[in-house]
Length: 127
Image (cartoon, rainbow, N blue to C red; front, top):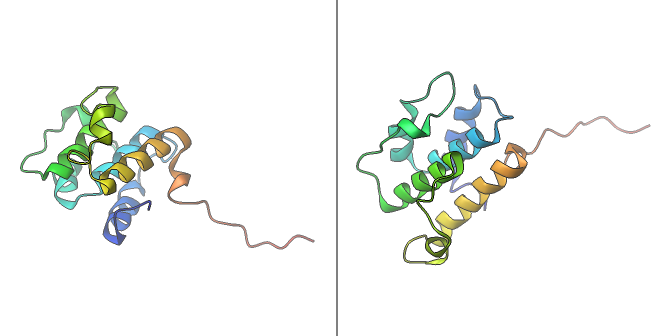
């Protein structure tokens, strides 16, 4: 699983269209924050020049899962420790679905957005 669902993929693709896709941190943030519609509605109004200033965002009335996604995004971007390793392995705190999203965001941070949106293949035939 890479995206939570098709709506998540659609929100993510629309969001990163104008962003610097070489900025792995911003791509990871966009991936996590667009996974939940209400969370994204709270966060996208803060975007400045197609960047997500995670340090300025204070989400309101989010679900528990959305708050975990937000905390993971802050940890990835700012090096904070809102979520511990113990939290990640505790199924009561982080569901399997949310864990997979966080892990995918960490892969995006390390390897780039190509992890979730592969580069277009060239259709040229070799001679």
